[in-house]
Length: 175
Image (cartoon, rainbow, N blue to C red):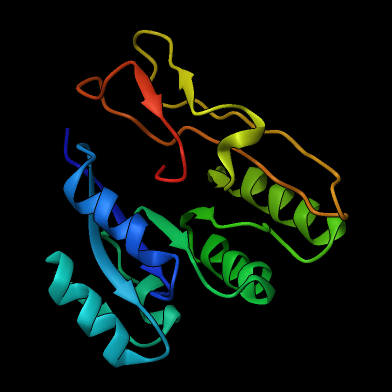
């Protein structure tokens, strides 16, 4: 099976460890694109990590039919709106914390992902531990939890997996 193609939204301070691990450490995934409103930052990240596509507007990246998952590394106040836009565009989403600014927004995003048959997850992984064991033969597993800490909703997931990927899928903050 082909690699899962990821589009990284936001290449600020936290993006370095994500990009490093996704491009150099993990198999089964491919960073297909980076996007940042500061286009030069996106171009620099693409060059440094060998990423083929660069976008300056998230709408353009969300329209890319090759991208399966959006890794949302935007500023926290933008997580709700950008995650919602990605879900509306038919993309699975993994977002840095927080998922949304309020509990109600978080629930809305979870309901939207459910209604569209999409996966939604987020950092940090520490709530559930560093890994989740997948059952033999399953291509997808969704693990979801809600935590009302400062009225934020969090979720964890294991994304679409091929049988070639290890049965123990290390979620961490790296999908």
